[in-house]
Image 1 (cartoon, rainbow, N blue to C red):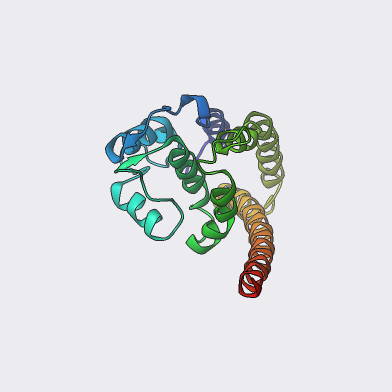
Image 2 (cartoon, rainbow, N blue to C red; image 1 turned 135 degrees about the vertical axis):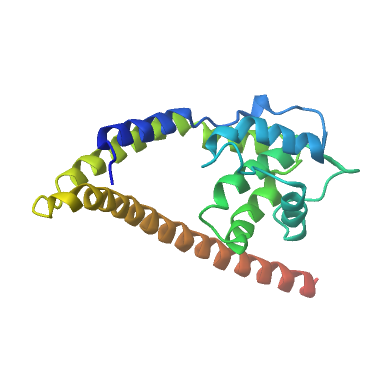
Length: 212
C-alpha cells in the first residue's frame, strides 16, 4: 500500500475548499417543473459528490418520495417554488447522516412556519442565516481536520514498517469517524427534544380544540 500522506491531506483540504453552498439568490424566483429542479440541483451540487461522474444528486423518484414522506410539500400545478428548492437543499445535506423520520421532525417546524408564508422572515432568510456561516465554519473544519491528521501521524511509531502507513491512515479515519459519531448522537438528542415538544404542543392543541 503506497499513499503519499501529505498529498492525501492536501486533497482533503482542496475538497473542502470546493464545497460551496447555493445562495438563496441563485435559485430562480419563478416556479420550476421537476426536470428543471433536478437539473438545477445537479448543476449546483455536482462537486459535492463522491464520484461526480456517476453519483446522482436528485432524481424524480427521490422528489416524489420526499413528498410522500411529508418532507416536501406537494408542487403547485406540477411546479415547484423557490421554497421547495430550499427544502430540497436541506434534505440533501441531512440525508447522509439522518433517518427520514428525523429529517421529518427537524423540517416540520420550518415548513409550518416559513414555507410560502410571504412574510419578511421567510424561508429564504432562514436558509441564508444558516448557510451564511459556511465560510467561517469551513475554515474551522479545515483546521480541525489538519490537527487530527497531525495527531494520527504520531501514532503507531513502533508498528512494523510495512504496516505503519496504513495504520496511520486507519487512525486518522477512526478519529474523523468518532467525531461524526458524537455529533450525530448530539443531533439525534436535539431532534428527540424537538419531537417531544412538538408532541406536547400537538396534544395541547388537540385538547383546546376539543374544549372549544
